Image (cartoon, rainbow over all chains, first blue to last red; front, top):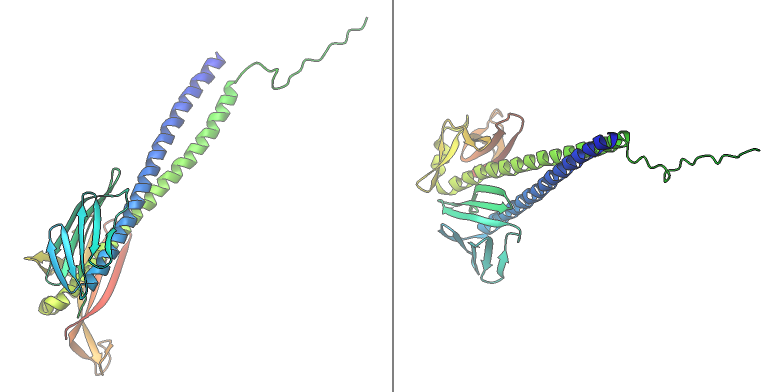
Length: 138
Length: 166
């Protein structure tokens, strides 16, 4: 009888442990994805700020931003799931990690600033950002 | 005749009783302790992660107000200097231009943000407190203060900058 009770408790405990560890591992994966989203969003915002502050002329379409400088032009756009920066001198750079998907990238030209909106995805996690970056005062 | 009885061994291997309920309970207690620690760790990490996300978004929304002020500094100084924003305005888009609206608590997700535009006084060209004797209100300089509050009432943040017209 004691053996049966012990086996029953053991089975119950094993099931619980398995369930909680599975849930925990899923949470760890979610945390990893969120961290990745935050670092990518931060990097994107810093990159946008850097290039817009450098810019002299701007051509804004809903999904593409063309920044003209005195010796080159930089285009920022999304190609499928990636955000791509293409400078006529230094070439192409991918602004998002392989693990990150971009479901939306929008630009809106204001009088002296550019409003930017993007949605990044990693797994089931999403990060939605909308911000504005002003041109530098000349 | 004397018989020597061999004492019965009670070693681990000769004990064939198997796991008793006591061993099972001890094992489960240890496992439960580990699980509680593990769950607490995960829960804490999720909280920190959430706080990071809020911090990042709040910084983004706050910096946006300063950038809007920098836009208006170049594009519409009159909007920036004549709208009464000493007690807080919100920033809104109207026909691809930024406008300041008074009064204005602007709610964004879990935050409330405001932009304040205050007068600046100068004395011999230097920015000074307006209470200083001889200080005059500058017509070409404004002080912009951006504030954001978390709607849970716990956290808040402020950024300041000066804007000029030339």
